[in-house]
Image 1 (cartoon, rainbow, N blue to C red):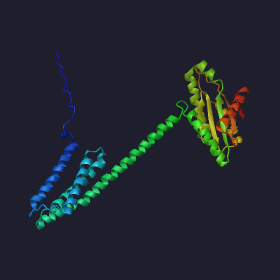
Image 2: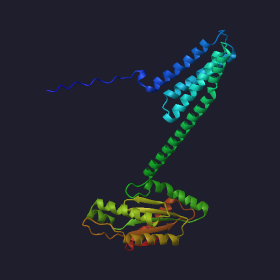
Image 3: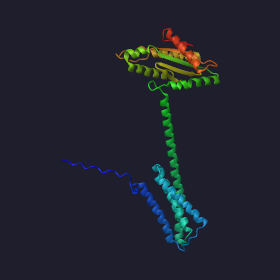
Length: 318
């Protein structure tokens, strides 16, 4: 019989040396300290005189060393972290040489060596600048991506999930705004209310799945026939609304008739595979001076009621 050995639990926390970034940081700090000790060993006439320059060099050394530690342990992208850490390391090495130089004297060959290493300060600033620029570019890309995602989710919240046109909440927001803009610009704005005729019969006789197909197909028809007009809404159930800014009554009637005629040609198969006969009733009203959104909506709804009472499959103006 096979014996199954239990797995040993993972440690709750890993030791510091398990992280390669921490190991690299310790190595860099060790190299920095080794360079400082080497400078002391290569110098002569050691003196501990804390002048202003020594304090300033020490402050620079601490700042750049902390910058190196923070950059190495931070969540920066690899492309930004590597040059930034390398840049801070070079500047720290240069500052270490400057600081030790305040306490010792060097022979001429050693002086040249130390000054050559101190010249790494410029290269350090260049590398740190490259890393910082890459970090800024990464942040900019992340911000653009977040903005795009926010706009995408905002658009999803404004669209009707079935018909892919704007929902009732957007209509309630846009209607008074479009009326106000039309009054300020002294131009026309038309409102269309569209009702799918006998839609309840479709649901009762063919099922709600077929009814959903009809709504989806009609939403696509509106987007196709009124492609130049973007303010298309599902008002509720089988009713749709269309706002037409800067459109006069004659043009609005022509667009409504085009939608009505295209609906008659719309092919949606019912539960038995036979195409459904579809039609719409449409009410139109133009915004009048001094009229608010509710008054315009009531007049348009009355025009739609007249279209239904007159036999459906027609356009009426209010």
